[in-house]
Amino acid sequence: MTDAAAAPERIMRGPADDIVDADYQVLPRFAAGIDPSPPLSRVIATPSIEGMDMLRKPEAAMERSRASRGGPIFWIAGLSAVFAAFWVSGGHALVRQAPFLLAAPETGDAFSISGVTSRVDASGLRPVLFVDGEAANDGAGPSPPPPLEIRVTGKDGRITRYTLATSSRSLAPGERFGFSSRLEVPRNGVRAVSVAFAN
Image (tube, rainbow, N blue to C red; front, side, top):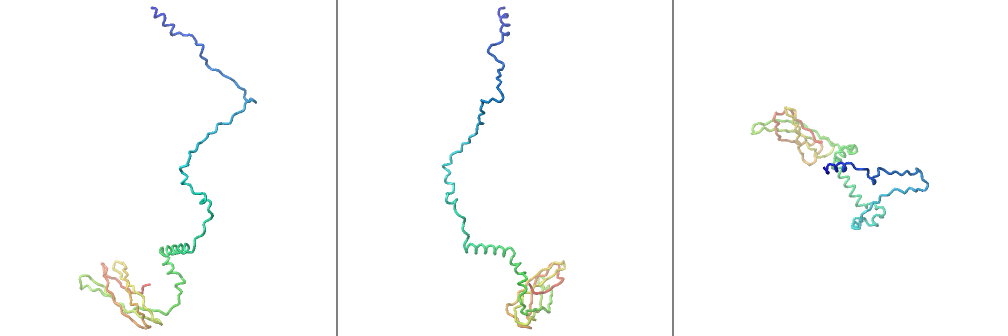
């Protein structure tokens, strides 16, 4: 029973003297004697780079004067590279079609083709197309004839071109030379054959 009487005392305690709810101190808003301190600045420490000095450029190289221009070998090599790039990328075709090259004085070269005949020979294992003709120098002076271009048109409308080289010797005015060529016959047959000078 004594324990039951002691239990309520343990539960009911009195207020403690050492506990304070809050303490406030009010300061004047603009006090003349208070000097506000500057905010704390953040100091960033940079690591030492003594071992990286080998990566820096020497001072003399950084203060170097303006580089001198290239010599004649540099410019010749550069212009040659530019010309080669122009020529390879199609400049040769552009130069060939230039009007100042087409206005060359005429030498009186005039060639004509006559007597062109063609026939298909089917006596062998595969049919063969024979094309015969004659070319003549109708110009005023001796000149080598240009190569010939033979165009074979099949029955399906496809055109096959063959180039026939001519002799490199010059033909005198009025001189003629004969040509003959043996060609493959198109699969669908031959509709037409024409011969002209290649450009």
